[in-house]
Image 1 (cartoon, rainbow, N blue to C red):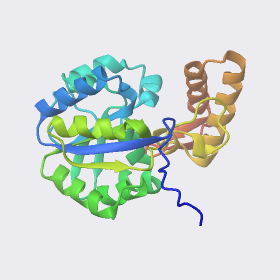
Image 2: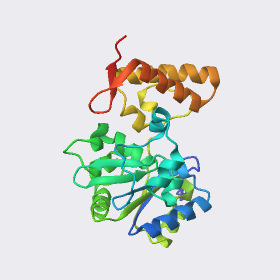
Image 3: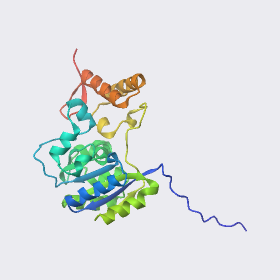
Image 4: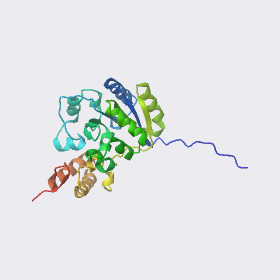
Length: 262
């Protein structure tokens, strides 16, 4: 008789998963962000979404690296003037209008992913809400529904991208900091790949959702060309956006789709 193999396959450290939780107030958010950063979690992997962020600065749309490039804006100044808190330490801060909830402030990669979720549904379709977008990103519908209800009530969602073998540690940290409704999502958030871009699927969601198909092809071609010449991804991104601005204009929805007249 053959012995039964009772060993358990452990997740690889190279696999990333998303750990999320709900927090009730801003003070908890500030505390948990600083604790995560002290634990070595990259600011690029921390997301916060909520309604009750107050600011004297009026902004519309989603402020991303794209906007910094195109508008010559300074990220630190934007984040500080809008939030004046630990959110200023995060990346990709902006404002999203979400059907059934209203205007949300979003910081980090989750906001950018939501902008591109469900084919851009979160960006303006009257029939799509936060639940459908979170489900598109791999979250169970029942948990997504709880998160939408809590956010609508004024609570805050925090999500962290972490190596699979660290998710238990991160979950405990969130819970010890006051996090509720914690969840580990086996599907990591979509991100732009490093190196040469093979197709539009490799673009980050916030970039892809702002470009027509023709503009996407132009961006990719110019990015890859610049990357092969310079080896610098940031310079390549600047040059790709310069090319898009020369070749296209934005339509009424903010999409770079109209070919410029020569």
